[in-house]
Each structure stands twice: as structure tokens, then as C-alpha cells.
Amino acid sequence: MHVTRPSNGDLVAGVSVAMVAIPQSLAYAELAGMPAQYGLFASALPPLLAAIFVSSRYLQTGPVALTALLSFGALSGLAEPASSEYIALAALLALMVGIMRTLFGLVRMGSVAYLLSEPVLLGFTTGAAILITASQLPRMFDLDPDGRNLERAAIALTSPGDWSWTAIGFAVMAAVVIVGGRRIHKLFPGVLVAVAAGVLLSAISGYSGSTVGELEGGFISLRVDFPWAAVPDLLIPALAIALVGFAEPASIARTFAAEERELWDANREMVSQGVANLASGVSGAFPVGGSFSRSSLNRLAGATSPWSGAITGLIVLLALPLTPVIADLPSAILGAIVIVAVFKLINVGDLIALVRQSRAQSMVAVGTLVATLATAPRVEQGVLIGIGLALAVHLYRELVVRSDVVRTGGTVTLSFHGVLWFASVPSLDIQVRQAVADREGLERLVVDLGGVGRMDYSGASSMLRIATELESAGIDVVLVRIPPGATRAVRAKLAEIGSPHTATPIGSEPRPDEPQPSDSGTDRDGSGAGATAR
Image 1 (cartoon, rainbow, N blue to C red):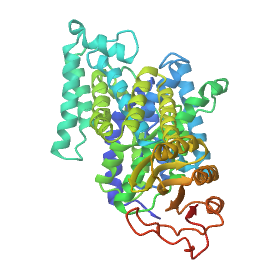
Image 2 (tube, rainbow, N blue to C red):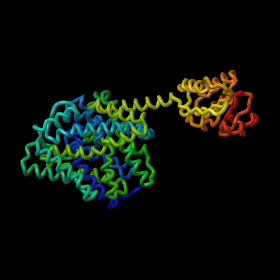
Image 3 (tube, rainbow, N blue to C red):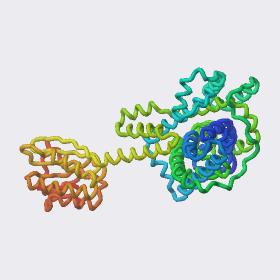
Image 4 (cartoon, one colour):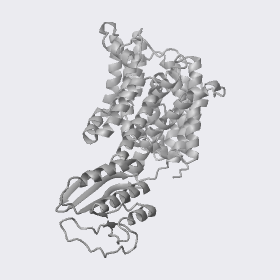
């Protein structure tokens, strides 16, 4: 889609999103362990430059909760959060993520967005949302207990005597304004109103609790010096963020493209997200991604092209000199902003539904959830464990072949379901032998392969061996409904079953209670789709 200039809808949408992005970026920066103002750096140049390459006209790029949590996990073990060393490492991490995503897009590897299975994503996002919520609970009570996220949250919840009721009041006010504002109108800038009200009330009342504090004003100073010695320590986290963090913007873009009946280019989107992270790195900020809430607002506000994202970045860029005015903003309000944004990601209902639908996939989702919580703050390890669980479940299913056995008179019909390959040959062998064992008067075995998704040469060779052995025992073996995707080599091997007898056409094998076909029938195409052994 080629647009020469922004429309009125782009202007309205860009301004609307900026009003939300400015306060949200402050909160997500602190979630990433960065000073609040760096969230604005991550919301200025990244969306401005990403708009040049973006595939989805609605996708809004900038700080997001999950990527911020991944960034904190990668960096918190290397330096003190908010320190100058930590900030330099965060910028390097963003640069590395940007390089990886850009390269993936250029070599047309945008399809990696599909590599993470839905159960893995469900378990990870739910676990990450729980951790993010837990990290913000002490802030809402104006407490700073020792320990990790879940431990700190437990201490805060069980220490009511130490709570600051003023801080709680600010947090509740912010949550009510944000959630209630949506009921007034979907474009109501609840986050901005909550921040403005918090700054005003804090200044008037002389609030003595934790606040954002003094921030440097002025524009971005582009960074060119990076702590390159830390590259080996950041390689795995950067790769995890590059892949896992791309799943969110890819999902957003795919969803909107489907609803609008438009094409979507995963490779182009990967490049745009790479460029955005390169921009964030040289801005001295931290890794960024696509925001679902801001992208939805962008679409709802009437955006018609990527210009809306560029306008959002430009407005944030122009607002940078004004950052000192939020010095009195209570930290409790930032905590409320984050919790309201991520609470919907705690998908307990979806987990319960998955448990009812698929035990194996629910184990992957729950396992990923538990791993994410257990490995915090290194939550990228939870994702890797989830991927391992998904592969294990897939491998288990590939190794096990299921079958249904029906006997009618002297004929046993054995219907297979699964994949017949060299690794599942033992399961195949056992089930065939169980089907014919101790069956007096058995004359014929019909093997129905219609439920087999794939069959390789080893599976076909195993069938030939089994048929030969049964033939010597006086049992006829008939194959029906060979998978259409079977290769020529597989079909040729199956055609050997019963040679020199002729083949039985695909799907022509009657049910055991129907008249038996003559052995003189042949395949019209001579492909050996089915075969009879005598």
C-alpha cells in the first residue's frame, strides 16, 4: 500500500496513541530496570523509523511489557538496574536484537513467528504476566522488600502494617480512571489523565512517598559506544527476545490483516521490528516490540497507513524536553498502569479449556508456565524449556501409532492413526501381532492406512516384512487407503506385498461384511496403491 501523505485519521490516531504511549513507556522502562525517561527514548525514534518498513498499517512499536521483562531478566544478573553500566548493556541488547531481526527478515526467515506453538505462548505469557503483576504489587503499596518477584509480592501482601494507604489510593485512582475511561469512550486517554492527575495531586498534597524523581530533559543523544565485551553474555537472551518478542507483533499484524482481508508480509515486519530495535539501541534505550493495546487503539482511532506510527514517534520526540514535569508522579501510579495493561494476559480460562481439550498440549502450556515462574528473572529459559516440552510431546506422538481393531468372521480390520516411520516401526509391529494373536479361524488381515498422516520407506519395509511373515502362517494381508502423500519409493515397496499378485486400488477394498473382490483386479494407473498378499 502506497500512501504519499498522512490522512486526518492517521493524525488523530497518531496523537491518540502518543497520549497513551508516553505514560506507558515510563512504566515499562522501570519494568525493564531502566530510568523512566528511557521509556520515552524507546517510544520516539523506533516507531518513527519502523513506519518506513512496516507491513501492517496498524502496528504500533515501542516499549511492551513482555519484552521489558525479558530485558530485565537478561540484564539484572550482569549489572545493577538503572546504573550506567546497566543502561549501556540495555542499549547493546537492543542493538543485537535489531541486528538479528533485520537479518532474519532480509534472508526471508520471518516465518520463525510461527515456530512457537500456541501452548508455549499461552504458558509463557500467563507466567510472564503473573511475574510482571507480582513485580508491581510492592510499588502499589510503596514497599521495597528484598527477594525475587514472587517473594517480594508475598512479603508486600502479608505486611499490611507497612502499607502506604496514600500510595494505594493513587494506584486505585489510576486503575479506576484507566478502566472507567474505556467505558466512557474507547478513545478516552485514561492513562494520560491518571498520570496528569497523579502529578497534580502529588505536588499539591506534598506527597512524601516514592515518586519518579528528577529526570533529565532534552532530546536523545545518539549512542555509538557499546560495551562490546558483553556480547557473548547477551547472545542467547538477544536471540530469545528476537524470536519470542516477535511473536507478539506478528500475531497483532496477522490478526488485523485477516480482519481487513489484507496481505501481510512476515519478512517485512521482521525487518521493521529490527530497524525499530536498532533505533532504540542507538537511542540508548532497551529492546522494543509491537504493542497490542496501542495498535488496537491506533486502528480504532482511524489510522489508514503507517504514517500514524511515525506521527506517534514524532510527538513523543517533541515531548522529551517536558519530562521534568513528571518528577512528582507517584511510583504507585506506574505500577497500576503496568498491572492494568498485563492483567488480561493471565489466561487461566484458556488454560482450563486447553486441559479439557488436549492433555498433552495442556502439559506443554502448564509446564512452560511453571518453568517461566521458576526461572525468573531469566524467563527466556522458561521459553526454551517450553519449546523442549513441545518438541518432546511431538516426538512422543510421532513414536506412538494408535490403531482400532474390528473382527468380522474370519477377517480382522486394523485401522492405523499416526505416522509410520522408522521410529514408530516397533509400535506398528507390536499392534499388528496383537491383532492376529490367538484368533482362531483368522484368514485375512485388512490394514487400513487412511488415518496415517505420513509413511516413510522404513514403515513400508516393515509392512512388507510383516506381510511376508503372516503369509507364511496362511493369513492374507490386504492394504487399503494408502496415504496420498506417500512417495513413489514407498508405493513401490508396498506394491511388493503379495507379488506377483496384483494390487488393490485405493479405497476399493470392501468392508469385511461386503463381497470380496477378485484377485484379478489391477490399479488403473499401475501405481500399486494397495496390495494383496497370499
